[in-house]
Length: 288
Length: 261
Image (cartoon, rainbow over all chains, first blue to last red):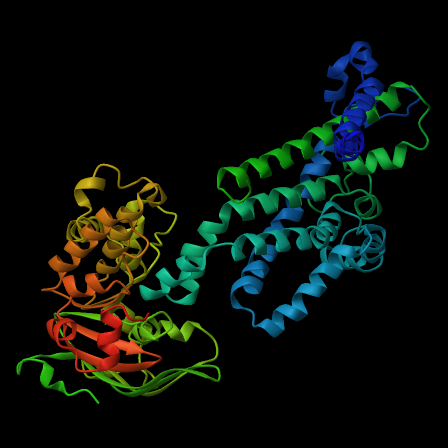
């Protein structure tokens, strides 16, 4: 009897580890970031410049980093969404079994490439290409980062979208065909609308992946914290900023605290994206 | 071979099949079926599960084409046209031959969009025209009064019986001559079943209806002609009254008296 109880307790604590850890991470982030809110105050974060080390005046505006992340993510989604959704439709609805068996492992392989390795590829292949294609001074730009992130987001979005498309009941397809619809009409007017909540959730999770990615963007986006919406300009993302500066910052300084604020913003964004994705799935009955 | 003399002299044979064999891969599912199905009558297919009646039904709108590895031998004509001939137009065929499935399968769209789906994919864009088609089809399927005030709500919210009548409306909206029904009431409660049967009774004068059922009382109630299938062969085809009172074949008699199946 007591054995049962002990075992139950053991498993319960194993299962709740992740809740505990998330809470711990959140508390830790808030604790390290908090003093900044009192001095110099939160409005310092809304400065338009990020100059954390200066002989004149340090500035901790995270806006250029937020726009950097937004620009890279937005551009990347511009490529990811059409590529992934069309790819998922092909794999789920059109491909022959042989084609599926070739395509799927490659998509999974793409997902398993470490982002540093992709970063190398970006640095050596993509950046020079962008540089010569647009006649730029440097190939390290928001666009380069976005293209690289597209490679990372595609497997997630394709796989989840494909699941969503595959879970559309066959009866819908039969009904549409029996009414004289062509395969393409059936796909675009019945199957995609029915799978749309799942596809949207897949895109949300893809965005989360892209926003949170660090190594590859650090290597290829040029790392200049300027506020810009030009795809060809070098930018710096929130993640890259933390990764690049955390090692050199003096412990407990304002700069250190500002970096933790960036971390909090990132956490909030990814958390929100996950919640939206789950809400969409639950609401449309694709997840219980 | 079934003699055609079971029909009155002036009967139009809308669907005619000659020596139809059908295969799923290597497995033969239908054997040498020759039969004439009369126009503007209700013809019921009965027989135990796996006897091939649904497979045979799905030949008439080429729904079996969507299953890979299937093969058909023989000749199937609808209104004189060989529907399996090279170059035969499947889209046109399916506009003329509507289908209602065993499990009601409305799209997760509004009631209006469900019924308007067929006309839309066939090129009707005018909102007014679509609204007329939707209203007419829903009136025909005896659903209009129940849904006229909520055409823009999702069809998934309808009851099972209503969903099935919506599927019938959706099939009628493209203007078919023939309606294929694959056990349309088998998943419904008795009350909804009666409504579907009544509806079939109302449609019988304007459409050629072929209905698969394994409910023999249903076949007896609603059909003019009944075909009994067993193990992929057509055993007997005759006026429903004859089949249920004086079947010619021993197998038919055994089945309808409940000795097997």
